[in-house]
Image (tube, rainbow, N blue to C red; front, side, top):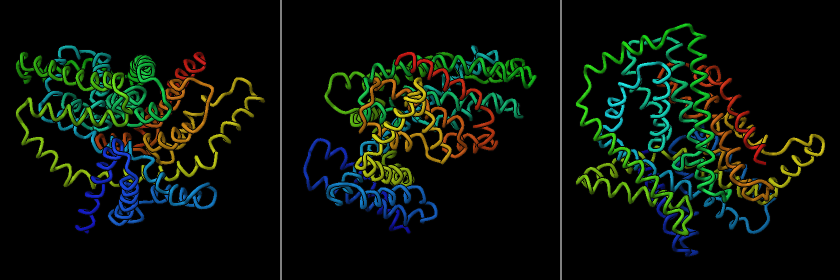
Length: 467
């Protein structure tokens, strides 16, 4: 099995590397090799993970294979090649994104920021708002890894507070903050893919998502107030006691301010560079983001005079990180085969025509009402936000819809946010449950279903008004 693991990580590395090479060098032989390596990656992954742990990618691949064989037009081998390469851009992005975490872990940025903010966390509302804000910001860097990281920090502060009321308070702040990041955060792969696939304006989509996120965060704060009243516990008094204890052990103010400013500079340089480069260069977003991340991370370690640390992180990632991503990459590669085969059958057009027929009966109904619901249903079937976005946006990009693409992106990503809040079968809720010990159903559906309904209604009011 050691040989299989070594082969798998090398093939994953080669598949991601060839995406970057073939993007700039359109050589037929390299493109064919890229697809073959993608197929080898699937074979090695199923051996590495065992078939009973490989059900979803196997289902997606075999479904796409059957549709391609029976219904798709053109050369079967040509279609299979295109299918295996369909998701190479997002696999390339996901292979590079962990480099952001290397930077974040190299200094105690979060500890110092929270230390600086302790003085402003003296009420339950302020504390809840701050936890949401920090989780949201760190999601830029660590994706859903922000959930266990922030839970640990919050738990260190509130280490003496236990029970359902406190876990509701902590868990909803973390999960809602991360879920809302899917509406506008450019480093979230599902958002970046939707913008790219639907050819939406990056600035308009980010601005629109940011405004909806701000409104949804205010709504979350109101919900937390109502939930605190329902539990009948004075959280503020307990928080003040815990904050006073923590302040006695905090480090010096100068160090806290310095690390906070440095973190802010890193945040602005990374995402400002992505946005600026997207406006200046004629490079696709899914290619631009990993290129900027690689250059930004390299410059950081060079400026800090830690090139050895960078090499150490790269070695560790290659040896232990890449093979751990085999399931996720296999799901995406298999989904690419299925999406390409479905697009060859014209199923997307059929779905849209079905919605138009429904509009003839119920005039105020349009497809933008249904897109979030489709994503939510798929989320309850165990498909994560990225996989769902790949499936839904992958089909939508082949259809001409009479709506601004920015509204389509918001409609679909709102479904992603809601599925993260509710589904007990996808990673953010599972990770939170593994951290706080509550069941995924309680962390997700029970704690958030009312908030999720309000979020859906709020987004739809905006979307339908803009239509």
